[in-house]
Length: 441
Image: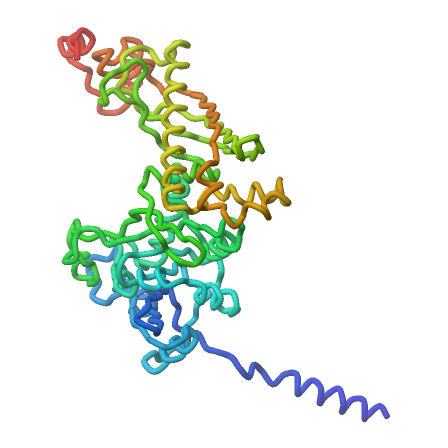
């Protein structure tokens, strides 16, 4: 009996140590950095930005390597009546198994977005190997052509574009990025609307950067750039917002944190006299209210930041001037919000997602007005704007350099004293020092 148990245990261990039957070696995998989807008639065109491992590992093909002769990526396309079949057809020319989980961006071509992206959404959510955290972008023209463009100083264009979207979110909020799961949530909401960043190759049709040799120059004519915010109603693209309109929608949807605004100087009549206000934090709260004439949205914006540049006459640290500057900041933010809201009404699409807020607060009323929301109710909706701007710091200078004419006497002397302790210090000539203190700009 004991021998039987030993034999049984030995057989179990043997069968459990047979190894992986469906393993895929690393040298058999093709890492995809970006995907492009186009449409031609009834057929899908799927393009792949395949990472060239030999160029990356050797450093020969990096965009930042001046001596590189091998491209860091290879772009090819396949077609089919469905997206899945188009991907399967790709193996007729790919020696590697395509690996999608590391995809950074998904670029949708013009024809694909105009005919509808519901099939693309279904494909992404149905298959486990596609990641819903991918960044989605739209382009005018063919997505396949955009995937061929290289980005100076960066090795992988797909990762570089994802970083551009990241920096845009972090430092200005003009064109908020949209991931696949965010796009699905927006289109499945009561508003059924979404905004997706639009990317283009600027510099003209002859300014393509699709060769490593072109990166040997100090500046390239063509550059990939975020140029607008494409608007989707349900699953179709219906228009594009400008920077100001998109920025206004960002304020309405609480997607602004750090951003820089150019503000007219208080009591100034010229456009040249402005100061830069850099927000450090911002919070937008939208509350729906039911009135006798319909509905209104109370929009409360609180923003706090510093002055990073000034061409204004007068001392911004004085309370009257400081309060006047804060009021000017509030006016500019209100203007951006109104531009964004007017653009949404013009396109008859609820980009601020006001419908969802009404649905949550007044669910019974929403059932009665949802069928005429975009055509009637949204058009008559009133916005009540309340913006509270706070300047926490005015920088190291109290007045503009042009106003004072030179560095202040205490600041200049402190700089001179600081320089005396450094090696190689040469004292400023007395006549030049006096001229600095007495000159008027």
